[in-house]
Image (cartoon, rainbow, N blue to C red; front, side, top):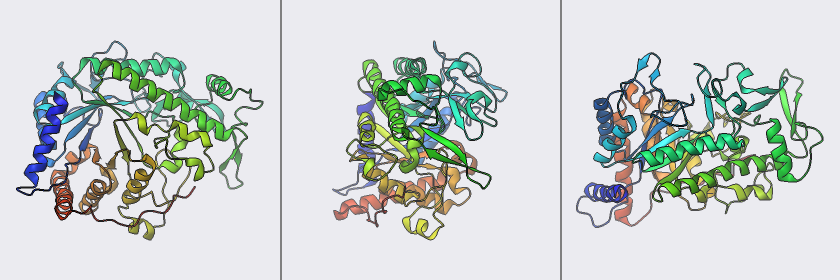
Length: 458
């Protein structure tokens, strides 16, 4: 019933926005992300929750993404499987139904609401909270660090987010138990997985992963981790990675681990609620996203034709077909392809081991590149508000570009909209994008086309 209501409200909104015109553009979904810890105090009171839900709706957003599990392993509801987050930075949240209050307010406002999980993150390094610290240190990933060798996450200096080894069966069981529990207890419209990945290219080199990989390839490694790759000094005070004979199969195997986890998660959620949407949120930088074990493309796309790190079998672990909802992170200052081409072209994303280049590293290019890789599956262009700092013009242009070139919008995070008081710019950007789409629909044309990006460099 809630999904039928939401669809009806979207149709009504489209009709209202088009006046008496016979032709109007469909209203694209627009998601506002609500970070768990950054908004802890302001969301500790039901009246404040209802206020900000209404603010989101007034700005033109159609859905909310509510953080349910943060990087500290704690969840925002009483759980049988994970500790409940009750206090953050000295603020104790009063005892009330937090998720229930949000879902009721969102549905009352005609919005959908999804629960998000920091999936394989089980430790907050700054506050030293999480199951890796207290309860399950055996879950922590083992990273292969240059100059240091195999190092547990707890021993990595300055580590802010601690990751588990996604291949461990007990880790996967824990995460899926949480998904099932939330899907059973609350009237959510969907579940979105965040950080459902490996930590980085240096993870995971545990004994478990070695044995699992050897089983996958049907061979025993003679030298580990050197058969995968080795760190060597570059002569300039740094380190370079020299790939071994099994590097490409290792990359393939890691992608298979994440794919199998997604497949199983989808199956388990369907058992709880066949109508519940299953989604994911990743970085948009596909050419280097293999470093975290994720292939978010469609299986119709063969990356081995474009990249020397991919085997022909890597395409089998593209998980786009498993998802009902996908949002990418177009986290770039440059909005258009022209802006990117005028820049130095260098960019290093959060998960990257080195600086990269390519026309996918701007909002327009990122959306168009994602469109090509997803094989017709819809996606919502994601944006990080802080990329634009105090430049409201660039922020508005990014909102409009994501709406023009993708099937929707995801704004991360509401805390930045609140702190900068950008409700007005956000609402005006959404209105401008929808007016453009409506005008194009009335004229019987698509939104303005621009040059497609060249293939991204390796």
